[in-house]
Length: 498
Image (cartoon, rainbow, N blue to C red; front, side, top):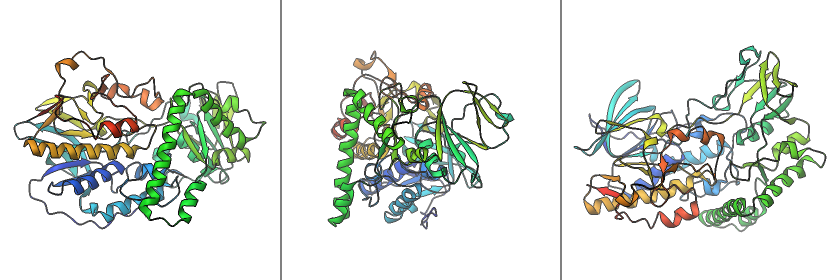
């Protein structure tokens, strides 16, 4: 299942140069490779992947029960029909990605085990020169355009707070991002710290096999219980429609659902919150204290809403295999965790499902003509390019909708840009502020007034800035982007061509 497709090695010269280098062979990098291969058949390109296989997030995370938090009709590729249920396991997603790689012969484009340490732009040659480590050797590789598809979190280091007394605990303390393959939790008491999508996945997967699983949260989170496969999906399947028809119909249905939920979270947050809480109560029973444990202090979608397929986490709690505690941590003890209330939670294993550590551009050091570039000092151009950085683009997806939706839009945008550069016989393009933009107010890359999840707030200082008007904004709105990005004017004065 996790095996790489057989790789057809491309012929290489002693000094390698490509028209385009794509960083990352996760879902964004595979999507970029597909579109580049289809729309720019004359361009040479390679996909550089640090790990030993494709998949990105789905290759990194190996904890029990790992599954998508987005429906696969929008999280999957627009160009490859998804035939399974809305919510998929990591194994199903990796299988799907493997098919996409093999069917489109992208295996011959991917170079595994390549760590990019630095990328330096040289205006005199209009090239990026990358310092890489490949097969244990340091070397250089160059390209005309650098396309970053490495995501936004640190694959080497999850976010793990330090609590007093951690060294006193007798059992293992595990972060889901670094799940030990040999961890035996059968018959063990497990405490999962955190209440996000990871916790919502882990708890039902471990419950029943573990002696008991406790979700320990500082404050409640919104959960969205919904069927793993809805009736509409089954009705469509019964019609035996062509795969692409079935995929497109389901994709539009899911897009409509996403749009409705986000719109309601802004226009009628109290009503939507009540529905989420009522959904939890329906599984947990009337006597369960949902006010304490499942009634957040913020409006829906200020943080990510975790999907609970078929209410599986709530079912585990209702059956007594799991429980939830809302309290603060005073310290770890030999036998568990002492809470702010004075109670002690006994545990054999503690799982710190406390979130991600974000990184800017995968930690790759950038410089332009010898001048180091800090992403935090740049202004984003349509959330794709960075001011003052030539021939560079990045994919940063949606936080409320499927990541891949934006990856697709970015791919279309860049291929149009490549065509435009060809028409102008330009070898370089870089965003530049117009005189009218010089004094525009700057805001964080992710607007905390709209989305304030902890992993984002902890990392705003390392991310680029955005302005207050197009094209210097990252909208985080698919329905706006799908209108503005295809219609973007490359000659509006905000892109400098040479």
